[in-house]
Length: 554
Image (cartoon, rainbow, N blue to C red; front, top):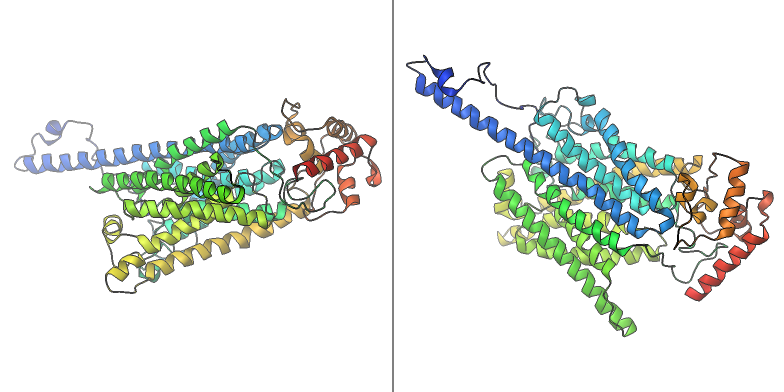
């Protein structure tokens, strides 16, 4: 992802380039042979540039197709009453990212990186794509696909309870400013963490080939801070009256088939994510070999992550319950964790190291997913363990396992490599490892400084969380005029109460700013369409039914 020269779109092509080589060099004696050689060299360079541009467009298409994978994964993980809302938000991600990245995002990330060698905090040119053409357009599309991916990570975490206006707001902010600054720091030639900086950080810079940190840690951090402010879904950790449940209530998604389809689409698109990123780093004779290595490592890490998560869960379940169960969801998320883990080092580690990275990535997912449940942090699709924590591990793993020969092929230097290889050189050189750790801390701090106050402000304004009654009837009915479908867990009394409220306050959504433990009276007031918190007999019956159902589950 580093050092792609989209400004020198091609060599200087003569005005008579459309003529054949014979015609253009006719009469050039005694320099006819030199003329032919020059024209052939120009043709070869132009063809190589065209192939690289087409390669970027193809890779960008694969990455953008991952949006469909995220959409299917999210749709399968939510309850059927929220499917339409989830689909809309996934498409809205792409739309918001395109506008944000067109106006300022690309300029902040890569603008001016070929105009100066000075280290800068943010790009200052190419706003509204001014000054781009040819391969610059291809590079823009490629980077836009990454920005959209970073924003989509947040969609799954906040599913089933986030307002539409809030979603569009943070999607544009993330892709228009937060993500570009991170991308500039690590991927731009002028970034202070970039390995192609004239004076690389700690003499080596940060190696994040395809975005374990830039994309996944950025998106995962945003998701974590957002869900802490937004709070859990109704009934997930607290009963209908706000009392803590002894154990979290499971909200199984309505379609395992959609989840599996989404996983396969994401795996497929990841070849554009990782192998495609090598096109922006190396355009030399070894670029094909480097891309092939990235594809192999991507495959091995995903496979190992899935297998490890599946069988670790199987072993734990058998020991705890005496019954062996194969958990398909753990297999899918384990594979995705392996993909995220290998993204940073896909082109700089050996295939055996990719297996190790994926293996540990599977464990990282299981441990952090369980930790979120203990902390009562509600992640509807487990995006935080998969993207944030696996992304952190993948970035850190590069500092341990980056191979000297692979780093040399990619960056023309092997002075600072993975720490384990440094030990093999009888050296304790940990410059690369230190740079990777500081990179992780920088991204977490940057996202926290901007997004955490932003989400607090959204919540304070009442624009963040959907109203309690809207959440109970489902966001498809609340925001899109949908109807209750077979398999919905929506009670008739909730729909009737929602319709009465809607009739009194047409076009208004009543926000819920509170996400902590609530008293009985507060809960009644949030749900009730009647002033003062008085509930109707139908709603009281609904609350009692919810309590009875939770008692049975427990």
